[in-house]
Length: 77
Image 1 (spheres, rainbow, N blue to C red):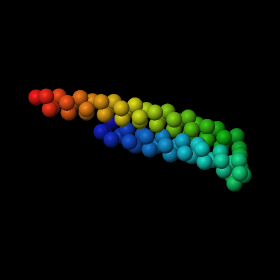
Image 2: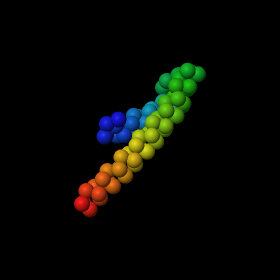
Image 3: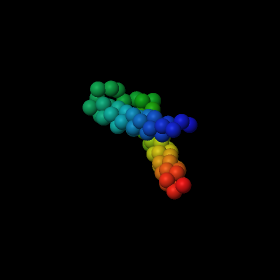
Image 4: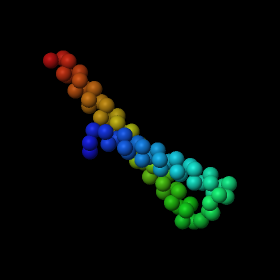
């Protein structure tokens, strides 16, 4: 993965979680019809968004730690 791919994963996770919040709200206020398939898709989007966002956050943490230690080693030389 590239150096900034964690940012893309975090953004994708945020968008999926946001849609997983907005679509049920639209169903509750009856702007869109609530169907079994739509409910299942919204649940899947929320779950996948959570997983992808957390994976992106873990990638960011790992990327940050490795570059922090590389910079410290560079300055010690």
